[in-house]
Image 1 (tube, rainbow, N blue to C red):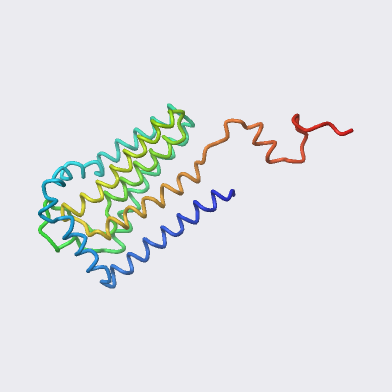
Image 2: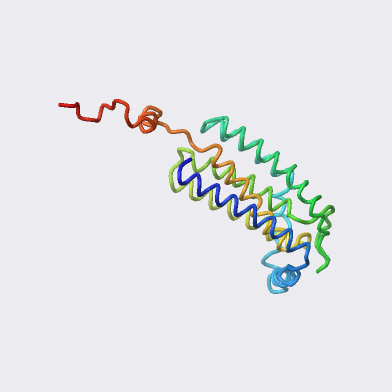
Length: 229
C-alpha cells in the first residue's frame, strides 16, 4: 500500500473512532450543553429568514434524492469509466443507507426535545441519516468527478457545489429541529469514513499499465536505460 493509501486508511480509522466516541459521549449526556448552544444559534430569530430555504434543501438528503444520486453515480461511472467504479459507488450508497439504520437502532437516541420541531420525523436520532447519506452519496459522486477527464476548473466547481449541498443538508436537520448537532457531526463523520474507504478501494487504475509494470519490476529491462558496455 502506498503512503497516500496508508494516510487515507488512517483518516478513516480516526473518523471511525470519532463516531464511536460521540456515541459514548451522547450516552453519558456529556454533549447536552454543546447541542443546546449550537441549536439555539441555528434557530435564532436573526437567522430565521436566511435559513428558511433549508425546509426544501433538506430533501436533497432524503432517501428518494439519494437513490437518484446512486443512479447518477452508476451513470457517471459508465460514461467516464471504469464502469465498475460507478457500480461500486451505487452499491456503497445502498449499503450506507442500511448501515446508518443499524447504528441508529444500536445507539437508540431519542429525537430532540430542545425546541418545537418545524417538521416531524420518527425513529432514532444518532447519527443523522440525511447527513450520513448526503455525505456518502455526494462524496462518492465527487470522487468519480475528480477522476474524470473534465477540466480542472469544472471538477473543482462541481466538487465544491456537492460540498455545499452536504453542509446545507446537515444544517437543515438542526434548523428543522429533528436532529441534535452531534447527530449531524456523527453523520458527516461516518459518511466521510465510507467515502474514504470507497476512494481507497476503487483508486484509479493507471492509464499507462506498461509504465506501472516497469515501476513494479525495477530490475526488469527498460528501454530508457543505457545498455551495458
